[in-house]
Length: 481
Image 1 (cartoon, rainbow, N blue to C red):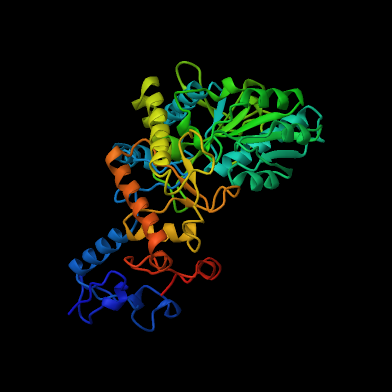
Image 2 (cartoon, helix red, strand yellow; image 1 turned 90 degrees about the vertical axis):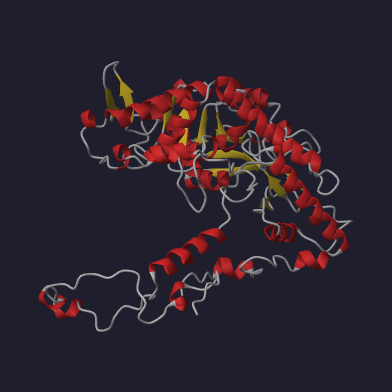
């Protein structure tokens, strides 16, 4: 009898003599085509399965996956929102997937029109003057922005500006970005309200400051209410202000970053503008700048003379290419579709609904898991544990128990300034009904944590894989049979 257990490999289901397809025997043997040293000495060890067995095996495997299509996915800071299937169909068209990157410009006018059009749309929603679409991820966009800032200061013969200031509420990649760009990281602590402490910023600013990297809203989900004063302090110091735009979902349609005094920012096209992501890709971290910095953008860029699209390939100030060819065109296409589908009012509604959903979660869990900063948040809320009520339970245990109840866990233990942090971002595409079910599950877990903590400490119990030694799994992964 065939074994259909989900956690059994296909090779373990193999039945000698079974096969899914039959081939017509070759008229000539392989020996007549290949040299002896390339011939197999034994048949390959492949699973012998019928076609139906194979279909059922992989279908069952796919059902074990936690995905947006199957589960509520409140992964804070990641903006795991619904991805319209129409965009997937458009991005799969041969017209785009078959285009060769070395094709003559005259033969790819449609693709260039989309690249040019997306830049114009990004300029419209941010107020910035120019964009590059080359970077292939958010952190890649940060790195590009840091290189642009360095090139600007070097061009002005201000080569001593080698420091980048980063608040402790910044995205985790910001310090690595600064170091990768060859700069010294200067960390500053936040104030008691989770925002930038202006006095700490004033102490950190110096003639060495090249850039302040600011995440807006920050990683505790709070808007920097002093952003214009921050911008003035930075600019008066001769420095530049960078905005990590990974949380733009909370601002799109509500405010233009350029109006806040931002000089450089990246946008995670694969987050704010709705593209499937996770597991390392796909991604795109478009970088926008004010007019002062446009000449330093990577090349090539797409231009239009009113009749034809062409490539701009020369500028002595440019930092050069940061990725081959035009960027991740499939993500660019999806982002273009997203911005063409929605008008300004709809984009505003998207941001408002993402904020509403996050605050609905924050208020709904107030008695079970209080927000660390007890105030109205933006697109995500950061909760913590009441250790008096559940002294033996940790955030990791909450996350594992959520898996038992059919939910992907939120981001945990980040940001680092919040003890036992749970960062929850429901996104605007979740309806009230699904959020209410999530709140019910979290409330149940709280009651279990108080009355029967051992249940959480042994979670998950209902998943194909029980709790693992996460340190060993990360350091010594075993990913093959």
